Length: 346
Ligand code: MRU
Image (cartoon, rainbow, N blue to C red; front, side, top):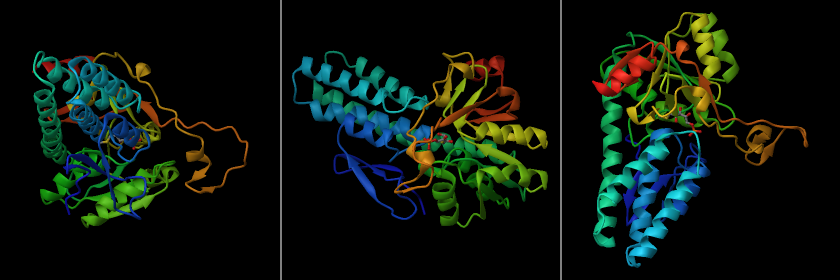
């Protein structure tokens, strides 16, 4: 089954509501930048590349919505659209990458009427979506070669089709290895507090009959110590110029454990996720989310009322713990500033 995380239908952007998966499979339609921003903020759509695609459609939808306005009102409305999208979530750089790409297209159409601009922006959003799948397939092909036949691969969070326009980044590597005939099994970390592993990664793998075993986040060290993990493959929300990797909270812990046990730690990373404007992970903004995600899940709140809570949604894994970045241009072993620079200059 091909999961269409985002799709264009009836003049709207439809996105699978990932808050309620796997219990309910349902699309929600979006028709403006502010509604898409709310979809990103509330995590109807999540995962760095999917957020980037959604933001691009948010810009296009805003242009379509404003196309009948005066040039001045169109320009002002578009700026408000960009601003509201930029405030939706801070960590995944793909959000800003997607908006920047749309802004360049808009800037390149100075003097043209709003209707032409809106159509061109919509075409660009479609292109970004299709390109994302092509990139994931290229990453998958490179990454599949790193996984031996029979590998038991641990992953954290969901970097699958649901986190992208299709195929996935980390799960894309696993899918491509399976397509290449390798017998791969997946160990999915539950991924507290939003449960992307238990709800989304497990669901994707079960749909495709790729063997998957769910564990809670505090079990990975034990599994590694028992020689039950051969490789770790995760996605990322932003990679700094020196190779430091921001990903879902708990990834750092997994990377430290992987190093302790001599297990390769791979990061599937499209070039759009590399932020060369920052020199290290210390500059990556880490989103803090609401306390009620930690004190319970949905209506069921189990923590003592009044307790102080922290809920950083991401952490940074230093580059020295990363065995390799898997990109659409190839594999970067032991990433550092020099190797990342070379990746963009080749
Ligand atoms: O908070 P989320 O669900 O948006 O976090 C997602 C992740 O951390 C993913 O691992 C990352 O975005 C890569 S997705 C291909």
